[in-house]
Structures are given as structure tokens and as C-alpha cells.
Length: 87
Image (cartoon, rainbow, N blue to C red):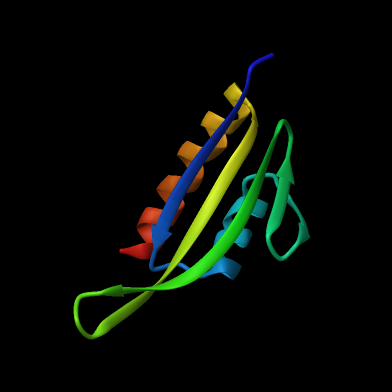
């Protein structure tokens, strides 16, 4: 079984919404920054980033780890949800 790690950043969604999306994809929140699912886990962090001279957005970084097939599947489904939410 191959284990992989993938890191992605998403702008325009909140940490709370990212966690909700992962829960809807079968994950369970262990705490505010960790969601675990069948064969995968996701660690969440957020920071405010500047976009241009006067605009700031929340950028949520998600580090997916686990079995390759499980990570790739949840990453693809999560990314679709996050991109629709973020704009």
C-alpha cells in the first residue's frame, strides 16, 4: 500500500467550511484542524493573505495524507467543492 501526502491551498473559504466539506466526504473531525476518513486524514490551517493593495482573503491550506487511492479521491472531490465556494 502506497502512502502519499498532498498539500493544497484554497482561497475564499473558511476553516469551518473546509472542515464541513471534509466531514460531508466521510471524515470525522478530531479537533478544529484535523479530519480523518477511511484511509486518509487532512490537516487544516488558515491565514489571511493580501490580494492586491487593499484586499485580503482567507487562504486555507489542507495537507492530505494516507493511502494513495483514498487521498486522490477525497482530494478531487474536496477541490471541486472548495473551488465552487471560493469563487
